Image (cartoon, rainbow, N blue to C red; front, side, top):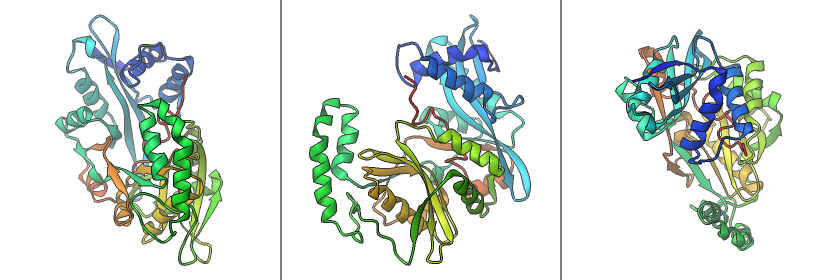
Length: 371
C-alpha cells in the first residue's frame, strides 16, 4: 500500500500540483511562483532540518500521493532548550487507493526526534487523526477572533467573494460606514462598528515602529511564558522578514503600545489595506496589560480604514477580549502531540507561547499570491 520517505527537491512540482488541486481546488497547472515558493519553504528554509524533513507518501505505482510539511521551531522550556516540530499542509490524493495514507504520514511525522509537535491549521479530518495518534486539541489556541469596524463594507467584502458583482456597491457601503462612524462616539461599544477617531485612555499611546524594534519587543514580551520561542534577535528578524509579503492582506505595520511614561506595555504586527479586513500576525502584551493592547489594535485598525480586524487567539488574550464585542469562529484548530507531561501541562494551562510567528502565520501560503 505504498511507503513514506523524506521530501526531495525533485518532488516539489508534484507537491505543488497536489496543493493546487486539493487546497485551491483548481485543475490548472501550478504556477512557477508557487513551485519556487514551495522549494524555498520546504527544502531551503532555515527551519528545515535533515533529521525532521517534510515527508511524502509514495503509492504502489511510484507516484507521490501525499505530503506533510514539517519545520523545526527552537523553543525554551524554562531555561532548557527544546525542539518543536511544526506540521503544515497535510495533503492526500484520494485517488491513490490508500485510505490510510494520511494517518501513516502523520504517524511518521510525529515519531521524530522532536520534543513535541503541533499545528495551528488542522482541519476536522486532521484533528481526528491527531487524536487517534495520541494528540490533543487546544481550544484556547484554536479560535479566530473578529472585531467588525465598518459593518456595511465588511458584509460586502465577504459577500463579494461569492458574488463578485456586488463590488459595484463599494462606494455606497463606504459612505454608509463613514456616516455611521461620524455619529459613533469613540467610547461607545457597538457590536457592529467602531469610531475612526483614535481614542486611548490613561495616557496610553500607539507608536508605529520598525522591524528591529518589534523584534526587541517580541523578546521582551515573551519572557513571561514558561514555554516560548528560543530565537536569537537575528532569528526573530528573519521570521518577521518572511512574514512581510502578504499581498492579499495588505501592508505590514508594526506598532508598540506605550504607557504614560512611554514604556512599552505591548505591541502588534498586522497587515492592513483600506476597506478590507486587517489580519493580525502577532499580538504582545505585558502582564495585566492585555486589555489595553486589544483596545489599541482595534483602534489603530479603525484609523487605517479597515473593515474589521481578525487574528488568532492565544490564551493570555482571551479574558481581555470579553466584553469587547468580539466574535469568535473556529476555521481551523491548533493540535498538540507531546509525550512530556510538563510541556503538555504548560501549553494546556496557557503558559506556552504558540501561534502567530511561533506557528504558521509567517508562511506566504497564508495571504500570499502565486499567480
